[in-house]
Figure: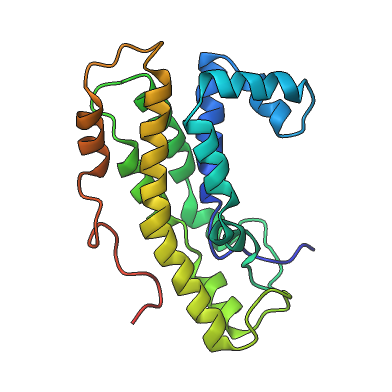
Length: 213
C-alpha cells in the first residue's frame, strides 16, 4: 500500500483549483489545463494569461514556486495511507468552501470574504498525527536528520502558512479583481476590497502554530 500521510495540505493547489473553477465559468479553463500539460496549445495559453490575467497569474506562479511551498508538498510520515487518513477527514469540506468563496468574490457576490474561508482552510489543514510521526522519524532524504530539526521545520512552515502565505493569498485575490475590472463592474473601490480582505488578519487571527512553545 502507498505510504506517506502529508503533514500539511495542498494550500497552493487550493488557490490553483479556485482559479480553475473561476475560469470554467468565465472562459479559459482549457488554457489553464494546457499550461498544466493536459494538451492544447501552450503558446496560446500563455498569450491568454498574459493578456487577461496580467497580475494574478504571475503571482500565482510565484506563490507555487516558493521553496516553503515545495517543502509543504514533501513533508509526510512513513505510515501506510489508509482509505480515509486523518488529514483527509480533518480537512473535509474546507477546500470546496474556499473555492466557492473565491468564485463568488470574483463575481462580486455581496457579503463574500474568501479570506474567512481561507482561515478555516488553514486551521483545518494540518494533520497533527502525521506531524508527530514525521518528527519521530522520517525516511525522506530532504528531512532534517534530528527529531528536533524536523519539529522546527514543521513549525517554521506552519508559521509561513499562517503568515506570509496568507498575505500572498490576499494579494492574489486583489490581483484577480484588478485583472477582472475590465469585465466586471465592481461596486467597491480597491481600498474597500483591501479592507474586506485584510480585516482581522494579524498576529491573533490564527491560533498559535501547532507544537509552538
